[in-house]
Length: 104
Length: 390
Image 1 (tube, rainbow over the protein chains, first blue to last red):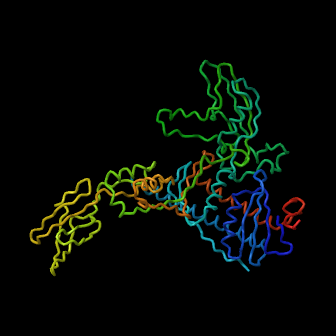
Image 2 (tube, rainbow over the protein chains, first blue to last red; image 1 turned 30 degrees about the vertical axis):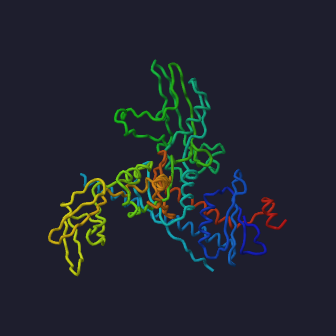
Protein backbone atom coordinates (compact mmCIF):
# COMPACT_ATOMS: atom_id res chain seq x y z
CA UNK A 1 0.00 0.00 0.00
CA UNK A 2 1.12 3.42 -0.96
CA UNK A 3 1.21 6.49 1.24
CA UNK A 4 1.81 10.15 0.80
CA UNK A 5 1.48 10.34 -2.96
CA UNK A 6 -1.77 12.22 -3.07
CA UNK A 7 -0.30 15.63 -3.76
CA UNK A 8 2.93 14.64 -5.43
CA UNK A 9 3.06 11.39 -7.36
CA UNK A 10 6.82 11.35 -7.59
CA UNK A 11 7.38 10.51 -3.93
CA UNK A 12 5.72 7.79 -1.94
CA UNK A 13 6.21 5.32 0.86
CA UNK A 14 5.15 1.77 0.14
CA UNK A 15 4.19 -0.37 3.07
CA UNK A 16 4.49 -4.09 2.30
CA UNK A 17 3.11 -6.73 4.64
CA UNK A 18 4.63 -10.16 5.19
CA UNK A 19 7.98 -8.98 3.88
CA UNK A 20 11.41 -8.55 5.42
CA UNK A 21 15.00 -7.71 4.53
CA UNK A 22 15.09 -10.45 1.92
CA UNK A 23 13.00 -8.55 -0.58
CA UNK A 24 13.44 -5.00 0.71
CA UNK A 25 17.22 -4.85 0.58
CA UNK A 26 17.47 -6.28 -2.93
CA UNK A 27 14.68 -3.98 -4.17
CA UNK A 28 16.48 -1.03 -2.62
CA UNK A 29 19.66 -1.96 -4.48
CA UNK A 30 17.85 -2.25 -7.81
CA UNK A 31 16.00 1.02 -7.20
CA UNK A 32 19.29 2.79 -6.61
CA UNK A 33 20.53 1.66 -10.01
CA UNK A 34 17.60 3.40 -11.71
CA UNK A 35 18.62 6.91 -12.84
CA UNK A 36 15.12 8.29 -12.20
CA UNK A 37 15.42 7.70 -8.47
CA UNK A 38 16.71 10.55 -6.29
CA UNK A 39 16.20 8.84 -2.96
CA UNK A 40 15.35 5.34 -1.88
CA UNK A 41 15.52 3.48 1.39
CA UNK A 42 13.67 0.97 3.50
CA UNK A 43 12.94 0.48 7.17
CA UNK A 44 11.35 -2.12 9.35
CA UNK A 45 9.18 -0.33 11.94
CA UNK A 46 9.22 -3.24 14.41
CA UNK A 47 10.94 -6.62 14.14
CA UNK A 48 7.93 -8.48 15.51
CA UNK A 49 5.71 -7.01 12.79
CA UNK A 50 6.28 -8.48 9.33
CA UNK A 51 6.08 -5.11 7.65
CA UNK A 52 8.51 -3.11 5.51
CA UNK A 53 8.30 0.56 4.47
CA UNK A 54 10.07 1.42 1.22
CA UNK A 55 10.48 5.12 0.48
CA UNK A 56 10.98 6.17 -3.15
CA UNK A 57 11.52 9.70 -4.47
CA UNK A 58 11.96 10.23 -8.19
CA UNK A 59 12.82 12.96 -10.66
CA UNK A 60 9.20 13.32 -11.75
CA UNK A 61 7.94 9.88 -12.74
CA UNK A 62 5.22 8.41 -10.51
CA UNK A 63 6.93 6.48 -7.75
CA UNK A 64 4.56 3.57 -8.22
CA UNK A 65 5.72 3.03 -11.80
CA UNK A 66 9.36 3.25 -10.85
CA UNK A 67 8.82 0.61 -8.16
CA UNK A 68 7.06 -1.68 -10.59
CA UNK A 69 9.86 -1.26 -13.12
CA UNK A 70 12.40 -2.16 -10.46
CA UNK A 71 10.45 -5.29 -9.57
CA UNK A 72 10.52 -6.15 -13.25
CA UNK A 73 14.28 -5.56 -13.42
CA UNK A 74 14.89 -7.76 -10.42
CA UNK A 75 12.78 -10.46 -12.00
CA UNK A 76 14.89 -10.24 -15.15
CA UNK A 77 18.02 -10.59 -13.03
CA UNK A 78 16.53 -13.68 -11.38
CA UNK A 79 15.60 -15.09 -14.77
CA UNK A 80 19.13 -14.56 -16.01
CA UNK A 81 20.64 -16.17 -12.92
CA UNK A 82 18.35 -19.13 -13.37
CA UNK A 83 19.26 -19.77 -16.99
CA UNK A 84 22.95 -19.24 -16.20
CA UNK A 85 22.76 -21.82 -13.42
CA UNK A 86 20.98 -24.32 -15.65
CA UNK A 87 23.64 -23.90 -18.29
CA UNK A 88 26.49 -24.06 -15.81
CA UNK A 89 25.15 -27.24 -14.20
CA UNK A 90 24.79 -28.89 -17.61
CA UNK A 91 28.33 -27.90 -18.58
CA UNK A 92 29.69 -29.12 -15.28
CA UNK A 93 27.92 -32.45 -15.56
CA UNK A 94 29.07 -33.01 -19.14
CA UNK A 95 32.63 -32.08 -18.17
CA UNK A 96 32.44 -34.58 -15.32
CA UNK A 97 31.11 -37.21 -17.70
CA UNK A 98 34.00 -36.62 -20.09
CA UNK A 99 36.52 -36.89 -17.28
CA UNK A 100 35.02 -40.14 -16.07
CA UNK A 101 35.28 -41.52 -19.58
CA UNK A 102 38.93 -40.51 -19.77
CA UNK A 103 39.69 -42.35 -16.55
CA UNK A 104 38.06 -45.47 -17.90
CA UNK B 1 9.02 7.25 -20.01
CA UNK B 2 10.32 3.73 -19.95
CA UNK B 3 13.05 3.35 -17.39
CA UNK B 4 16.38 2.40 -18.83
CA UNK B 5 17.66 -0.65 -17.06
CA UNK B 6 21.21 -0.27 -15.88
CA UNK B 7 21.29 -3.77 -14.46
CA UNK B 8 24.41 -5.79 -14.60
CA UNK B 9 23.49 -9.37 -15.14
CA UNK B 10 25.36 -11.71 -12.79
CA UNK B 11 27.69 -14.46 -13.93
CA UNK B 12 27.80 -17.89 -12.33
CA UNK B 13 30.51 -20.50 -12.40
CA UNK B 14 29.95 -23.84 -10.71
CA UNK B 15 32.84 -25.45 -8.86
CA UNK B 16 31.40 -28.64 -7.40
CA UNK B 17 27.98 -30.24 -7.51
CA UNK B 18 26.96 -33.27 -5.52
CA UNK B 19 23.55 -34.44 -4.46
CA UNK B 20 23.50 -32.51 -1.24
CA UNK B 21 26.27 -29.98 -1.77
CA UNK B 22 27.05 -27.25 -4.26
CA UNK B 23 29.82 -24.69 -4.43
CA UNK B 24 29.69 -21.94 -7.01
CA UNK B 25 30.85 -18.41 -7.74
CA UNK B 26 28.44 -15.54 -8.23
CA UNK B 27 29.99 -12.50 -9.89
CA UNK B 28 28.97 -9.00 -10.92
CA UNK B 29 26.18 -8.56 -8.49
CA UNK B 30 25.65 -6.86 -5.18
CA UNK B 31 25.74 -8.23 -1.66
CA UNK B 32 22.03 -7.49 -1.24
CA UNK B 33 21.10 -9.87 -4.07
CA UNK B 34 23.44 -12.56 -2.76
CA UNK B 35 21.99 -12.13 0.72
CA UNK B 36 18.43 -12.23 -0.61
CA UNK B 37 19.18 -15.55 -2.30
CA UNK B 38 20.76 -16.90 0.87
CA UNK B 39 17.82 -15.86 3.02
CA UNK B 40 15.31 -17.35 0.59
CA UNK B 41 17.24 -20.64 0.43
CA UNK B 42 17.20 -20.98 4.20
CA UNK B 43 13.76 -19.70 5.08
CA UNK B 44 11.37 -19.54 2.14
CA UNK B 45 11.86 -22.52 -0.14
CA UNK B 46 8.97 -24.87 0.64
CA UNK B 47 9.45 -28.47 1.70
CA UNK B 48 7.28 -31.19 3.20
CA UNK B 49 7.53 -32.22 6.83
CA UNK B 50 5.34 -34.05 9.30
CA UNK B 51 2.95 -31.58 10.88
CA UNK B 52 0.21 -33.57 12.63
CA UNK B 53 0.69 -36.77 14.60
CA UNK B 54 -2.08 -38.99 15.98
CA UNK B 55 -0.62 -41.40 18.51
CA UNK B 56 -2.57 -44.62 18.87
CA UNK B 57 -0.34 -46.37 21.36
CA UNK B 58 2.89 -45.32 23.00
CA UNK B 59 4.47 -47.22 25.84
CA UNK B 60 8.03 -46.09 25.13
CA UNK B 61 10.18 -44.04 27.46
CA UNK B 62 9.62 -40.82 25.47
CA UNK B 63 6.32 -39.01 25.83
CA UNK B 64 3.90 -38.33 22.97
CA UNK B 65 4.83 -34.75 22.14
CA UNK B 66 8.55 -35.59 22.32
CA UNK B 67 8.10 -38.25 19.66
CA UNK B 68 5.87 -35.94 17.59
CA UNK B 69 8.58 -33.27 17.74
CA UNK B 70 11.23 -35.72 16.56
CA UNK B 71 9.01 -36.92 13.73
CA UNK B 72 8.60 -33.35 12.52
CA UNK B 73 12.34 -32.90 12.22
CA UNK B 74 12.84 -35.91 9.95
CA UNK B 75 13.68 -34.65 6.43
CA UNK B 76 11.33 -35.94 3.73
CA UNK B 77 12.12 -35.95 0.01
CA UNK B 78 10.27 -32.86 -1.17
CA UNK B 79 10.47 -32.67 -4.93
CA UNK B 80 6.69 -32.33 -4.96
CA UNK B 81 6.73 -29.36 -2.60
CA UNK B 82 6.92 -26.55 -5.14
CA UNK B 83 3.87 -27.86 -7.00
CA UNK B 84 1.84 -28.70 -3.91
CA UNK B 85 -0.63 -26.37 -2.24
CA UNK B 86 -0.43 -25.18 1.32
CA UNK B 87 -3.04 -26.96 3.44
CA UNK B 88 -4.60 -23.69 4.46
CA UNK B 89 -5.14 -22.75 0.81
CA UNK B 90 -6.51 -26.11 -0.24
CA UNK B 91 -10.14 -26.12 -1.33
CA UNK B 92 -10.36 -29.81 -2.14
CA UNK B 93 -10.41 -31.02 1.43
CA UNK B 94 -13.19 -30.33 3.89
CA UNK B 95 -11.17 -27.99 6.05
CA UNK B 96 -9.08 -30.42 8.03
CA UNK B 97 -6.16 -30.19 5.62
CA UNK B 98 -5.71 -33.91 5.14
CA UNK B 99 -6.70 -34.53 1.56
CA UNK B 100 -4.39 -36.12 -0.96
CA UNK B 101 -3.66 -32.86 -2.79
CA UNK B 102 -2.25 -30.96 0.12
CA UNK B 103 -0.81 -33.62 2.43
CA UNK B 104 0.93 -36.98 2.62
CA UNK B 105 0.01 -39.60 5.18
CA UNK B 106 2.51 -41.76 7.07
CA UNK B 107 2.04 -44.56 9.54
CA UNK B 108 4.36 -46.36 11.88
CA UNK B 109 3.88 -49.42 14.00
CA UNK B 110 6.59 -51.07 16.07
CA UNK B 111 6.61 -53.44 18.99
CA UNK B 112 9.59 -54.96 20.66
CA UNK B 113 9.04 -58.68 21.24
CA UNK B 114 12.51 -60.05 22.00
CA UNK B 115 15.13 -59.15 24.54
CA UNK B 116 17.22 -57.04 22.18
CA UNK B 117 16.58 -53.26 22.13
CA UNK B 118 14.52 -52.34 19.10
CA UNK B 119 15.55 -49.12 17.30
CA UNK B 120 12.56 -47.44 15.71
CA UNK B 121 14.04 -45.49 12.81
CA UNK B 122 12.90 -43.31 9.94
CA UNK B 123 12.99 -46.41 7.75
CA UNK B 124 9.98 -47.73 9.68
CA UNK B 125 7.85 -44.80 8.53
CA UNK B 126 5.63 -45.93 5.68
CA UNK B 127 4.36 -43.29 3.29
CA UNK B 128 1.18 -43.17 1.24
CA UNK B 129 3.07 -41.45 -1.57
CA UNK B 130 6.25 -43.10 -2.75
CA UNK B 131 7.75 -39.79 -3.89
CA UNK B 132 7.66 -38.39 -0.35
CA UNK B 133 9.71 -40.63 1.91
CA UNK B 134 12.22 -40.05 4.70
CA UNK B 135 15.57 -39.13 3.20
CA UNK B 136 17.89 -42.06 2.87
CA UNK B 137 21.49 -41.27 3.77
CA UNK B 138 23.76 -43.65 1.91
CA UNK B 139 26.49 -44.14 4.45
CA UNK B 140 29.37 -44.24 1.98
CA UNK B 141 31.89 -42.83 4.47
CA UNK B 142 32.11 -45.89 6.69
CA UNK B 143 32.61 -49.13 4.81
CA UNK B 144 31.60 -51.17 7.84
CA UNK B 145 27.91 -50.49 8.16
CA UNK B 146 27.02 -50.01 4.54
CA UNK B 147 24.54 -52.87 4.52
CA UNK B 148 23.22 -51.71 7.85
CA UNK B 149 22.10 -48.15 7.16
CA UNK B 150 19.41 -47.88 9.73
CA UNK B 151 18.07 -44.37 9.17
CA UNK B 152 17.38 -41.74 11.78
CA UNK B 153 16.57 -43.26 15.16
CA UNK B 154 13.24 -42.00 16.53
CA UNK B 155 12.99 -43.98 19.76
CA UNK B 156 14.38 -47.18 21.28
CA UNK B 157 12.00 -49.82 22.64
CA UNK B 158 12.45 -52.48 25.28
CA UNK B 159 10.62 -55.78 25.41
CA UNK B 160 6.92 -55.20 25.65
CA UNK B 161 7.03 -51.51 24.62
CA UNK B 162 4.99 -50.50 21.63
CA UNK B 163 4.61 -47.48 19.39
CA UNK B 164 1.80 -46.93 16.89
CA UNK B 165 0.97 -43.67 15.18
CA UNK B 166 -0.41 -41.96 12.12
CA UNK B 167 1.23 -38.78 10.83
CA UNK B 168 0.25 -36.15 8.27
CA UNK B 169 2.98 -34.25 6.42
CA UNK B 170 2.28 -30.85 4.91
CA UNK B 171 4.00 -28.22 2.87
CA UNK B 172 5.60 -25.33 4.74
CA UNK B 173 8.50 -22.87 4.77
CA UNK B 174 11.44 -22.45 7.12
CA UNK B 175 10.06 -19.14 8.35
CA UNK B 176 7.21 -20.93 10.09
CA UNK B 177 9.28 -23.69 11.65
CA UNK B 178 12.86 -24.82 11.14
CA UNK B 179 11.72 -28.36 10.32
CA UNK B 180 10.66 -27.07 6.91
CA UNK B 181 14.04 -25.55 6.08
CA UNK B 182 15.71 -27.55 3.29
CA UNK B 183 19.14 -26.05 3.86
CA UNK B 184 21.67 -27.45 6.25
CA UNK B 185 23.89 -24.44 5.75
CA UNK B 186 24.12 -21.77 3.08
CA UNK B 187 27.06 -19.40 3.22
CA UNK B 188 28.72 -16.92 0.96
CA UNK B 189 32.00 -15.14 1.28
CA UNK B 190 33.65 -12.29 -0.56
CA UNK B 191 36.37 -13.48 -2.90
CA UNK B 192 39.72 -12.19 -1.63
CA UNK B 193 42.42 -10.59 -3.75
CA UNK B 194 45.88 -11.03 -2.31
CA UNK B 195 48.93 -9.04 -3.46
CA UNK B 196 52.36 -9.94 -2.18
CA UNK B 197 54.85 -7.08 -2.16
CA UNK B 198 57.76 -8.92 -3.76
CA UNK B 199 60.37 -6.31 -2.93
CA UNK B 200 59.55 -6.32 0.76
CA UNK B 201 59.27 -10.09 0.74
CA UNK B 202 62.83 -10.42 -0.52
CA UNK B 203 64.17 -8.62 2.52
CA UNK B 204 62.98 -11.45 4.75
CA UNK B 205 65.15 -14.36 5.77
CA UNK B 206 63.87 -17.88 5.29
CA UNK B 207 63.04 -18.11 8.99
CA UNK B 208 60.97 -14.98 8.84
CA UNK B 209 59.20 -16.21 5.72
CA UNK B 210 58.34 -19.47 7.46
CA UNK B 211 57.02 -17.58 10.47
CA UNK B 212 54.93 -15.38 8.26
CA UNK B 213 53.45 -18.31 6.36
CA UNK B 214 52.66 -20.10 9.59
CA UNK B 215 51.05 -17.10 11.26
CA UNK B 216 47.87 -17.60 9.27
CA UNK B 217 45.42 -19.98 11.01
CA UNK B 218 44.40 -21.39 7.64
CA UNK B 219 46.89 -22.25 4.95
CA UNK B 220 46.79 -19.22 2.67
CA UNK B 221 50.47 -18.93 1.76
CA UNK B 222 53.15 -21.45 1.15
CA UNK B 223 56.86 -21.44 0.41
CA UNK B 224 57.97 -22.72 -2.92
CA UNK B 225 61.26 -24.49 -2.41
CA UNK B 226 62.00 -24.78 -6.08
CA UNK B 227 62.19 -21.34 -7.60
CA UNK B 228 65.37 -19.51 -7.23
CA UNK B 229 64.99 -15.86 -7.83
CA UNK B 230 68.01 -14.13 -9.14
CA UNK B 231 67.54 -10.62 -7.88
CA UNK B 232 70.71 -8.76 -8.58
CA UNK B 233 74.29 -9.02 -9.59
CA UNK B 234 76.73 -6.54 -8.17
CA UNK B 235 79.87 -5.75 -10.02
CA UNK B 236 82.38 -5.19 -7.29
CA UNK B 237 85.05 -3.16 -8.89
CA UNK B 238 82.64 -0.80 -10.56
CA UNK B 239 79.91 0.00 -8.12
CA UNK B 240 76.99 -0.32 -10.49
CA UNK B 241 74.17 -2.70 -9.94
CA UNK B 242 72.90 -4.68 -12.88
CA UNK B 243 69.46 -5.86 -11.89
CA UNK B 244 68.56 -9.00 -13.73
CA UNK B 245 65.17 -9.91 -12.35
CA UNK B 246 63.87 -13.33 -11.50
CA UNK B 247 65.28 -16.20 -13.43
CA UNK B 248 64.43 -19.84 -13.46
CA UNK B 249 66.58 -20.85 -16.33
CA UNK B 250 70.01 -22.31 -16.38
CA UNK B 251 72.08 -19.27 -17.25
CA UNK B 252 72.00 -15.53 -17.15
CA UNK B 253 73.30 -13.12 -19.71
CA UNK B 254 74.91 -9.94 -18.51
CA UNK B 255 76.04 -6.88 -20.30
CA UNK B 256 79.01 -5.35 -18.66
CA UNK B 257 80.01 -1.85 -19.58
CA UNK B 258 83.43 -0.94 -18.34
CA UNK B 259 85.78 1.75 -19.60
CA UNK B 260 84.18 1.98 -22.99
CA UNK B 261 84.15 -1.77 -23.43
CA UNK B 262 80.83 -3.53 -23.75
CA UNK B 263 80.99 -7.23 -23.20
CA UNK B 264 78.32 -9.89 -22.87
CA UNK B 265 78.98 -12.67 -20.45
CA UNK B 266 77.01 -15.78 -19.81
CA UNK B 267 76.99 -17.03 -16.26
CA UNK B 268 75.75 -20.53 -15.69
CA UNK B 269 73.67 -20.83 -12.59
CA UNK B 270 74.82 -24.39 -12.08
CA UNK B 271 78.28 -23.03 -11.38
CA UNK B 272 76.85 -21.14 -8.47
CA UNK B 273 75.53 -23.16 -5.61
CA UNK B 274 72.46 -21.83 -3.97
CA UNK B 275 71.94 -22.44 -0.33
CA UNK B 276 69.28 -21.74 2.25
CA UNK B 277 70.00 -18.21 3.26
CA UNK B 278 70.19 -15.66 0.53
CA UNK B 279 73.90 -15.42 0.14
CA UNK B 280 76.53 -13.76 -1.88
CA UNK B 281 78.77 -15.63 -4.22
CA UNK B 282 81.94 -14.63 -5.82
CA UNK B 283 82.37 -15.47 -9.41
CA UNK B 284 85.74 -14.93 -10.93
CA UNK B 285 85.69 -14.29 -14.58
CA UNK B 286 89.35 -14.34 -15.51
CA UNK B 287 89.06 -13.09 -19.06
CA UNK B 288 87.37 -9.98 -17.88
CA UNK B 289 89.06 -9.63 -14.53
CA UNK B 290 85.94 -8.73 -12.63
CA UNK B 291 84.37 -9.85 -9.43
CA UNK B 292 80.73 -10.44 -9.30
CA UNK B 293 78.58 -10.86 -6.32
CA UNK B 294 75.39 -12.72 -7.08
CA UNK B 295 72.44 -12.34 -4.83
CA UNK B 296 69.89 -15.14 -4.78
CA UNK B 297 66.58 -14.99 -3.05
CA UNK B 298 65.40 -18.58 -2.91
CA UNK B 299 62.26 -19.94 -1.39
CA UNK B 300 59.56 -17.62 -2.59
CA UNK B 301 56.34 -17.13 -0.74
CA UNK B 302 53.32 -17.61 -2.96
CA UNK B 303 49.57 -17.76 -2.49
CA UNK B 304 48.58 -21.37 -1.92
CA UNK B 305 44.83 -20.96 -1.50
CA UNK B 306 43.39 -17.47 -1.56
CA UNK B 307 39.95 -18.64 -0.52
CA UNK B 308 41.17 -20.21 2.68
CA UNK B 309 41.54 -16.68 3.94
CA UNK B 310 38.88 -16.02 6.54
CA UNK B 311 39.38 -12.24 6.81
CA UNK B 312 41.04 -12.53 10.17
CA UNK B 313 43.91 -10.07 9.93
CA UNK B 314 46.47 -12.40 11.47
CA UNK B 315 48.90 -12.20 8.56
CA UNK B 316 48.64 -8.43 8.49
CA UNK B 317 49.28 -8.20 12.22
CA UNK B 318 52.26 -10.54 11.85
CA UNK B 319 53.68 -8.41 9.07
CA UNK B 320 53.41 -5.32 11.26
CA UNK B 321 54.95 -7.13 14.19
CA UNK B 322 57.89 -8.09 12.01
CA UNK B 323 58.29 -4.44 11.14
CA UNK B 324 57.13 -4.78 7.56
CA UNK B 325 53.65 -3.31 7.17
CA UNK B 326 52.39 -3.56 3.61
CA UNK B 327 54.08 -6.92 3.07
CA UNK B 328 50.80 -8.28 1.73
CA UNK B 329 47.67 -6.44 0.76
CA UNK B 330 44.36 -8.21 0.93
CA UNK B 331 41.13 -6.78 -0.45
CA UNK B 332 37.71 -8.35 -0.69
CA UNK B 333 36.27 -8.02 -4.17
CA UNK B 334 32.98 -6.31 -3.53
CA UNK B 335 30.96 -7.93 -6.29
CA UNK B 336 32.32 -11.46 -6.29
CA UNK B 337 30.90 -14.11 -3.97
CA UNK B 338 31.62 -17.75 -3.33
CA UNK B 339 28.50 -19.63 -2.26
CA UNK B 340 28.45 -22.93 -0.42
CA UNK B 341 25.06 -24.64 -0.33
CA UNK B 342 24.48 -27.76 1.71
CA UNK B 343 21.05 -29.36 2.01
CA UNK B 344 19.47 -31.86 4.40
CA UNK B 345 18.66 -34.18 1.51
CA UNK B 346 15.05 -33.03 1.17
CA UNK B 347 15.89 -31.24 -2.07
CA UNK B 348 18.98 -31.53 -4.26
CA UNK B 349 21.42 -28.66 -3.85
CA UNK B 350 21.12 -27.41 -7.43
CA UNK B 351 17.34 -27.73 -7.23
CA UNK B 352 17.35 -25.70 -4.03
CA UNK B 353 19.05 -22.79 -5.75
CA UNK B 354 16.63 -22.91 -8.67
CA UNK B 355 13.64 -23.08 -6.33
CA UNK B 356 14.99 -20.11 -4.40
CA UNK B 357 15.08 -18.03 -7.58
CA UNK B 358 11.49 -19.12 -8.34
CA UNK B 359 10.31 -18.10 -4.88
CA UNK B 360 12.05 -14.74 -5.15
CA UNK B 361 10.31 -14.14 -8.47
CA UNK B 362 6.95 -15.02 -6.93
CA UNK B 363 7.50 -12.53 -4.13
CA UNK B 364 8.33 -9.82 -6.67
CA UNK B 365 5.18 -10.65 -8.61
CA UNK B 366 3.15 -10.27 -5.46
CA UNK B 367 4.64 -6.84 -4.79
CA UNK B 368 4.14 -5.72 -8.36
CA UNK B 369 0.51 -6.73 -8.44
CA UNK B 370 -0.32 -5.44 -5.02
CA UNK B 371 1.20 -2.08 -5.86
CA UNK B 372 -2.04 -1.45 -7.71
CA UNK B 373 -4.16 -1.45 -4.58
CA UNK B 374 -4.16 1.52 -2.28
CA UNK B 375 -5.71 0.49 0.98
CA UNK B 376 -7.42 2.51 3.60
CA UNK B 377 -5.16 4.65 5.70
CA UNK B 378 -6.78 3.76 9.00
CA UNK B 379 -5.15 0.35 8.85
CA UNK B 380 -1.75 1.94 9.05
CA UNK B 381 -2.71 4.61 11.50
CA UNK B 382 0.58 6.10 12.52
CA UNK B 383 2.32 5.98 9.18
CA UNK B 384 -0.69 7.44 7.44
CA UNK B 385 -1.01 10.19 10.01
CA UNK B 386 2.66 10.98 9.71
CA UNK B 387 2.47 11.19 5.93
CA UNK B 388 -0.53 13.45 6.10
CA UNK B 389 1.40 15.70 8.40
CA UNK B 390 -0.73 14.95 11.45
